[in-house]
Length: 531
Image (cartoon, rainbow, N blue to C red; front, side, top):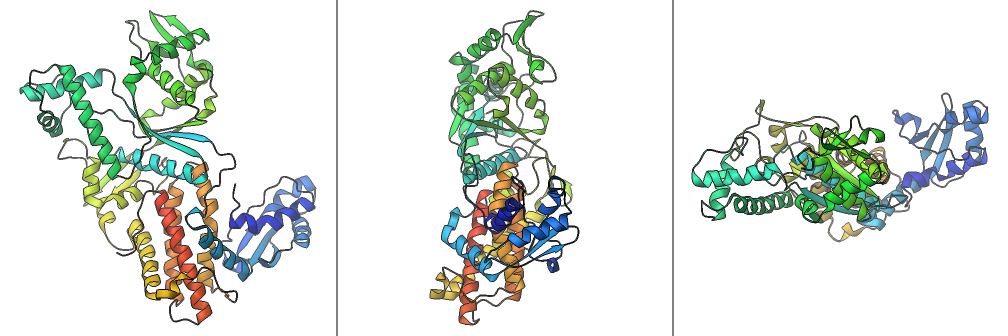
């Protein structure tokens, strides 16, 4: 685990806390709401009042007596016992120098205990193109996988094709009906894409429905892979549900929970006693007619995932799958696994509007907008940013008009423009752009110091985003850092300043450019050098 600049800054405080008897108490530094109170503040003395049986202000004073750091210019006790710190220019130089030294690895490796993590996301039926609503699953799941890998975990990304069951039979029958000019079967698949796909397969109209099913699935799998590739989603594996039935995995998983005493028969069906493991109700594993249910397939897939050695299996599921949390964890427990290894993340809906009107209609499917169409409208970068800008637990209202504008109201444009502006400064600097460190004489002005603080916070921010499964924090950070840079650019002349100042500001620009590029990459957004 790599220490962040803020952890390094807090280290003398942590040693002082230990010296006064505060063993095991973490020291956290926060930026005060009012900059007049200093650069950073800690409330550690307040948390020590009860265990040390002393007034927080007294404890804070005792802590400060022990603090010795070249990065802390001044420290004081404030209010009921807060410790306010003012950092020395040496700390600002250290942050800039560290970013430039570590490059695209700055902020990486935060995981204290790296694990093997599988992220399974999107995972739709191969019966139609990827929809715009599913795009949130893709953007969130891919960003989450990127965060895990950046933190130091060994990550594998998997797409689970639900290519077994009645829906697949209906898909094949729908293709065949379209080719023959017949009415669709009840519950069949609608939309112009069915006719287009049927015509593209080159099968004779009287080919068996199973052949239509097989060839149609193959074509849809290719289409899904192409669209998700365009959306910058990378997968290490494409898992076919039907393989679990063909190789006997489903049958073996059912027998395993039966042998463990976690299944029982009732009304001719076989039930999983999932309430024993915290689920809200028991689940049918095998119907009275002998057909296995979805939960039987889920058990087999859990056994496959955890049996492959993943420490954590992350599922990214839509809001209508909330009930899956209990049943998946119960299934893992019934199979003898620790249910904590099952991590289910539920994302909320996306509401898309254009010109003040809801957008639902697709040219290809008629009742839902396709991801390819969304990307044609606003581009990949805007779509990726827009779909992770809010917590996955919140509904997103995506206004297409806003995301095509090239102004400060468009968050992705605002962030990318900051990166492009820095690139332009460095191009104009010519040979001087290669500054690899801030000058020893550099005394940052307030706007410079604010930008350095943003860079210092990046490692802790991405670590927290990975731990809390929240890539939206990275999107927000990129926007805040872009704002800090734009303020710096307005207030501090870079090129043409006194030589030592120019050198330091060019180093700060390069460091900011690096961190912005890394942050945007973590959410799948490109960082252009010109716009």
